[in-house]
Each structure stands twice: as C-alpha cells, then as structure tokens.
Length: 357
Image 1 (cartoon, rainbow, N blue to C red):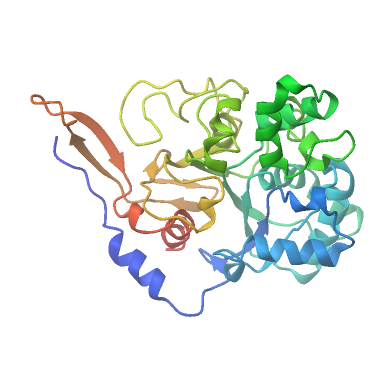
Image 2: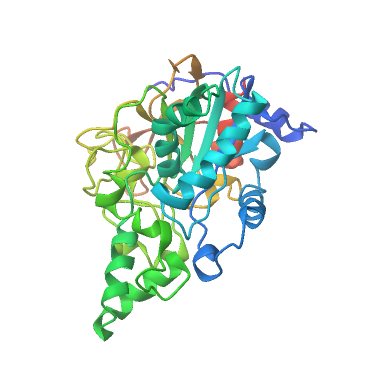
C-alpha cells in the first residue's frame, strides 16, 4: 500500500530543539502543571507548602517546568478530598487572582495528576465563585500516563498494608517499588485514592474540558510490577486508566484495531471511554516517567488525530506503511501507522512542538 504522509516532522522538531528561550505558553495559552504521585512524601512527609512546591518544581524540571506559567503542587501523603484539595485551592486562587487563565489555560498532568486534575475541574468554578473570584478558563488538559482510573498497584498496596503474610512477598516487593515504603495502614496517603474502585468514583461527572490522553506502554522498575497490573501498562499505570476507559478491565490498547506499537490488528480495547476523553498518542516503548522528556528512541502512534477539540487543534503527522517479518517470504506484510520521526525525540517534545504550531 502506498504510504499516506502528512508534513514531515523532522524540520519542525529540529527547530523546536534548537530554539533558545522556551515559551511558557502552548498554542498561545498559559500552561499550568499538575504533577503525579511523589513516593518521597510517604517516607518523609513535607513539612509545609514550600517543601511541596520545591518538590513540584523538581518533578517537571526535565522538560515542562520552563514551558509553564504556574503549577498546582500537592502533597502525596494527603487525600484528594482533604489536604490535597485545600493546598490545590490555595494555588488555584492565586492563579485566578493573577488572571493567568483569562485567555484560557492548558493543563498538563502526569500520572496521579490526572485524577487530581479531574477533581479540580469538577470543583474549581464553585470554589472560586464562593470567594468572589473568576473561575479558571481551561481550554484542554494534556494527560501523560493518566492514572484517573487508578492502578492495581494501589489495590495491592492497601491489601498488603493490612496483610503482611510471608506468601505475599512478591506482591510486597512490587508494592514497595511503587510506594517507596513498607505499606502500613494510615500511611499510604493518595495511594488510597488510586485504588481502581476509589479512583473511578471520584469526580466522575461529565466535564466540558477535553482530556487529551498520551499513553505509554514501556517498563518501569525493571518490569517487576507488570505482572500485577491488568492488561498492558507502563509499569505503573494500566492502559485502561491511561486511555480513559470507563471500566477497570485489562485492555491491550485504547482502540480495538490498533496496537500500542501501531500495528493494525485485532486488539482487546475498551468497551467505552469517559466523556470527553481522547486517546491521541500511544507509545509502546516509553516508560511511565519517560513520557516527561527523558527517553528517546520510541515510536509514537496517532489515534485520535486531525481534529479540533474545544478550539485546540490536534494535528500530528502520520505515516502508514507495510512491514514483513523476517520469516514472511510472501505477501505485503502487516500494516502499521506512526508519527514519522517520533523515535528521534522524546514524547513531551513531540507533543509540545506539534501542538504549539
């Protein structure tokens, strides 16, 4: 089959990588960051907001920190409907007072930040109006490896905290890699909210803000955690969560006819996606943390593409091609799709340079 090619990415990517003085905007809109789970908060709880903010800055330093106008930082030893919501609101209030979202903002979240963002989007307008302030105008949210649907690792962490039997040693080893501590009741903080049932019952009302999903499928922690997560995963977050699937059943991909590697073939995909959730890119090779700019050499695959979501243009280059395995001596081989040149850069740079046009 003849390849179908959009404008090549290589020139644009090179220009983006060579640019000096990064902008704190994306497509003309201020960027607000919402970080993910920080296991250090469980072993060494932050003493104050200053420590939370310092950790939040370090979290994004690889790529997004210099491209953001503000952050919503939160303590992982807290609960979303408790101290996390309170500290988040204090920062949301400041963002509103500064008018940073008067021309609409783009939220960028990672991992558990997806769940925190969902809670913020459901409540921020009510919170701010109650204080006589202008609600934040949010154009869209980019969710890297989103854990809004929870993770089975959190289910196991809570179970191990209450049952430390010797035969659970392999499970405990995986849980300790995920949490960074020997799990104990009352010391798991936001991990409680990341249990699959808990996450899927928190702030689930339909929301008008599009959630652009950026899905990883690589390994973390040397692959130790993968056997304990349903379906494909990135070593921390299952694909069902990252895609925005309405159920916590294990799936192979965000779509039933395309693998995370870009091969057109039958896949065990979600029965449905949450309202306004759009899996835009999948990447079989990149790890859970690697999506934030630290890993190259992995092919990204476009899913929902060539569309406009709430005025925000999603337009990744794409290339389809056929490839035969070494043992296939006949036929045209299997059909694939990719974002050309995506293995030459990291996933965050790819997303930023494409959507910033």
